[in-house]
Length: 188
Image (cartoon, rainbow, N blue to C red; front, side, top):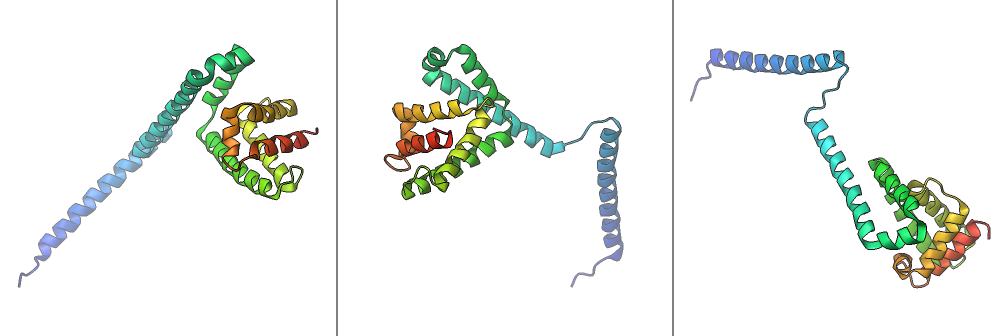
């Protein structure tokens, strides 16, 4: 059996203690220095956050570019350059939290709309709740929301097959139902 040398154990404990003191002292020194200088030291967590912010900015640029490639000429002709530029600027100005909130609204909207469609009453409570979720979702991307705009979106969803597909994927005929519900929501 090997006898443990207590002197070695004491030396290792002292060495470990010194390393811990140096590490903790260095960390506190960094924090105090950055606090006194009016800065915040984020270390690796800060770098991770910054990388996520950069990735989100790139994601938004990609959405704008994709939209411009697919629909740019059409929407500029239909709505004008100024409206499209404002819309792109709104998207580029969204925070990650706002974008995440929009995704939650979209998911809740689809779930609520499907349930309302299954009931079949566009004036019913669930259908009107779906319209309100849609209003909240639209308001994130178009801060100048008004009822005429909302109504026109309902008409666009019905008249353009690309948009119709988004809601008819929930159930055939759901887009027409949604348009009717929006018209009721907007007071028609």
